[in-house]
View 1: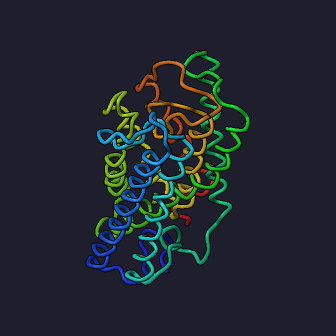
View 2: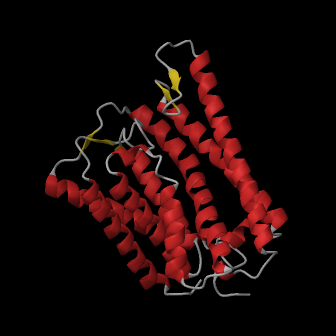
View 3: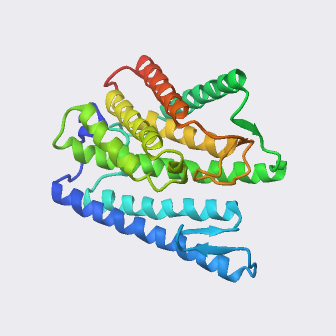
Length: 301
């Protein structure tokens, strides 16, 4: 057995099998997207409210409860997960766990450490930013305790599914596929980062600056992949990715983001400087990488 997950020697992993798996996964992603769109169309058409409608140009529902949109959007990842399971179990003849680690079981302590450290860095940086500049964020007066409790429940249930599925695909399936022909971690991480970033270019926040916000996603994709490659498992990346999205959904309401008008604790009170945001992303992921390697070492999966 190899000492790192991305050079897997389990199952059947020919190029033809990877191509077949990709087609299966994409089929289920498209199916999930179709179910999401049909769900929004039906809900806006049947709710009897003239203020809610489906915007065919934006491809989104207008006036619909953000909770409903959140659940429907995140439910699409269940289709993605099913596609991954079918591909890995029946085409590659191995387990989903093999996309994360070469060991016989997951190290939940490592996932939890990644989650806790990442969200800790995030909190420290955001608190420091608010104390120094006193702008950018304000308490969201539109959020009631009951609304936040609903949001908390939904985020804790659905967001880890969403982020883990993305990790299984990007840091697992695609990394192992590239690892068949490439051996340089930086090159693999860069390719994954470009794919990861390109798939987020339809996000609303790109309206602030497609270049700089796009670079944020590329930095995040690169660092999550590089950390997984250097430490030998995707467990730290799974924890960090979940922490990142959970923090954003629960604490920052931003209309120009995927979360939209979710009743988070704080709301964006002014223009978000994409340069400062990019610098913050570099600091967060750079700090997380340094702490991860210091804690777990290089190649000790």
